[in-house]
Image 1 (cartoon, rainbow, N blue to C red):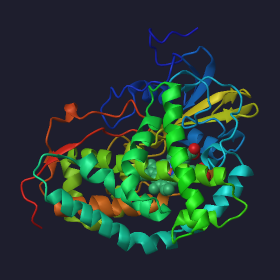
Image 2 (cartoon, rainbow, N blue to C red; image 1 turned 45 degrees about the vertical axis):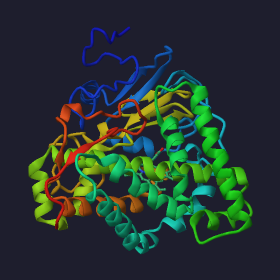
Image 3 (cartoon, rainbow, N blue to C red; image 1 turned 90 degrees about the vertical axis):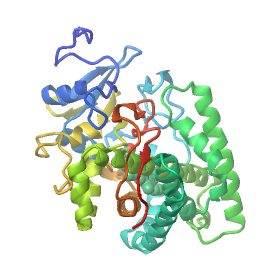
Length: 413
Ligand code: HEM
């Protein structure tokens, strides 16, 4: 039996390594070492049962394209019995939560996702671009009125995606304090199951009321459009609303704040981007590759499956690290270097396969508007604390920073 305490490169890890010992933007060094020696590796969960950890680019991509790896076991789903927070101990597929299609397999997944693809096309998202840019600019106006230092997360990175997703879905933005507190609690790793459950119930009770009202009196928003589908139950509508609301703001908010932190820590990259705003779309892809804030996902092997020279037995819990895959030197040259000029296409930051991020065009537009506006409006933006004092979200399912204290000397354009 391998022993982690001894810590050889080939040791089977006990528990998922999460410590960002290699730096705030890099995967845990044990994950990197494992990818080098065994990109599909056994992993012992804290309750003692054996699962698998997949870290190589090709292997992660193949896994996510293969629906024999079921999504009916996911970190975000409450009904997985957690022996230790964040570690699913179940070795069978979980029952489904109505509407939560991120944790479903085809054909259930296909049926629900199909109802939404029309609303998230590149064309529909392009139509929203002006409005999103406007929301970002107004948020920057408000930030510019403040006396620095300010917390970029609170003043910019969180409000922009929250405003956007609220407007798109038709969720009153005034209700944000409640749903943000509940979604933050839900996404926290070390929270007792009953607390998570309370946050989940709080959010879904609120959303059930909202979708019921939309069904009775439809408006111009996405939830109203969905509510017009008679074949969707209120429970399904609630589940979909929950998924979109959560997926739509936690992720983008953390990309904006961690992305800003990363740029501030790479001044030559920041300068290149400021000098040539045409680099922005590519820089957004590169930040997605380099940071992959939605890093860890869970799958469940429905049969014995060969992957990367290993056989993953039926019934195994499989953990993938999108960040490790994005840093695989077999796919990207100098993968640990942040290079806004590189072609980062093919990164796995939005996942891959049938569950690939539905909101990715929206997220790209938000990030372009967000980073673009921020860099233009705050040419002297700087960290207000030493980098090692920035609190990292190693305790949350979506990685990023809890706060990003920033300062500037001049807000005039
Ligand atoms: C799925 C990342 C923004 C909605 C995913 C997945 C990833 C991801 C990795 C795949 C999950 C899996 O395979 O199990 C991100 C990142 C974002 C972002 C990094 C921001 C930078 C958004 C936005 C929305 C959204 C703005 C808008 C509503 C969704 C939905 C799914 C999903 C609904 C589930 C798709 C399915 O199961 O078919 N996202 N996402 N995401 N994302 Fe995003």
